[in-house]
Image (tube, rainbow, N blue to C red):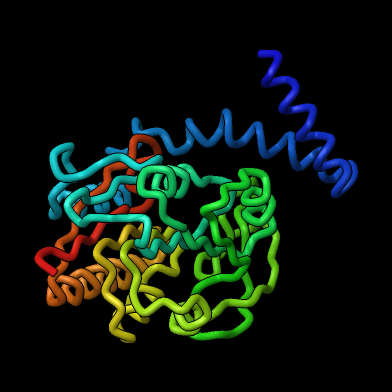
Length: 276
């Protein structure tokens, strides 16, 4: 309890220093929403009453689920344990914000460097705070072309998105073509890539395949559209099925990584390239 109170006091001080009283009000609303309102609003009890979540559930059921025999837990994700990783493996992590559980686990388990990419200042501050010598961080967005893109953030905190439209703060930041990223780092391949990039995974994965880069494992979160349009949902599942079909043709097999909380708001898959 004392630690929690101290954490809130430090949070209020930090937001006051940055944005004055407006920052304090935002911090209080942020904590209230994420600790009290959000768990109720997105409770799994409401799944039977949500056509969108039921549809996502039905779609996930078309894939095999990860198991303890073939997959190992790495922080808040899992990896296929038969694609051998080593200290020389090339690991890319797209989308950081303030959570590097997966990246820490990978770097400590295999002794390899992890290349992290995120355009947000929150991610930059977090990377500096954790100070993992195996982290190679770039404050850029990874995309299918190099350009400046506007990002928006959820009203009460969360990851910025170049695709999804949120009601929070907006900012413009540099995004770099994946091919250029590889050239800058002198990489000709990627062994494992993790993407939590708020709707941008379709563009980045297809670009990766276009330039004939085929990681042994692709971990990706596909966020459902925040829309009332049936056409948006049709487009989302059409794109996801087309991407899966393309990957299957390249020797990949998709597995579902089930969420423990806030289920079926996004679909988390791991694509494993077998026998390559």
